[in-house]
Length: 430
Ligand SMILES: *Cc1c(COP(=O)(O)O)cnc(C)c1O
Image (cartoon, rainbow, N blue to C red; front, side, top):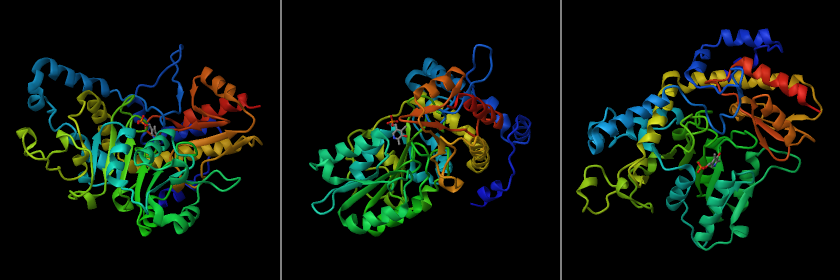
């Protein structure tokens, strides 16, 4: 909180020279060169604002993957133990960095599978419907994949989605969620709700919800609480352990820069680390490491989040994740977040400075309630605006009917990027 207060005191100025000066004084500016920035035909960097969709490639990724390809070529199966980074415990090389990024203990973290798959596996353990308590609550603007996952879990257990899927909705004429409204829903239906599954940072509005509060409200009514952090991981600091939530899942290809379709991350709170009574779907990688290769042992679940693994993991994807997480480890989330608040604050300042009647920023203006993304509504605009931005190599994301999602990423975006983006946007506005 103190960080954001401090930053609000900076008087921004709407000039290129001012933006360039912020870049000159930015201790993280040098990390831009650690990434491949796509370029136009003239060799100018694109203005890339879609790190919320696919983060850019670290320059170290290629050699990290090549290392594993070479070890495979030279060692074959022996690579499981003899590779420079032995494949057998490879996922463990990711755990500590990921735990730091998410504010978790290592025993609470594992990297495995993909996000939606993990949501299902976690619901096997944390959605245990009973006759009296079987509803699931999501936010009305939930990402489609999460909605489909929850819907099909309900159907799998024989429940009707229309009746059993409860939506936490913004008030009429509002776009953001209010925790008081969640409290109200839980007051009336809490005893029938088995699980809250909520996007910690909403993909559409960019709103960052108070996870600790949500956990406390849900737990007070006996509900399990799971959080999707696809838009939170590597963006905000969710302090998962302290938040008290039961579980979380996220992907690594958005702000974590680990490459298209890369594996997901999972958090299961320490209180379940040795709980062998939880239902789960298991595979040989769920088995305790000491006896995993005896092959004939009865199932003995390995402690912590690792106990949710099924399969031996894809090392090539993990190599890309390791390269990306090593960069996060080098810089640390505190510094990234500090720059992020400033960078997005500058974007907000410039957009507001356009003073345009048709523009409204949907995302909360309080930096404690958002990550780096701003969702900019341009009333009466259509997808043509997005097309024109893209033609000028301003890469943003369009959400129907009229919202541009723009995510300046502290790792590789500059204040100059932000300045140039708003300047181009201005020329395209109706
Ligand atoms: C990006 C995203 C997904 C994507 O799921 P995958 O299984 O990785 O394809 C799911 N949920 C949310 C909230 C997302 O932002």
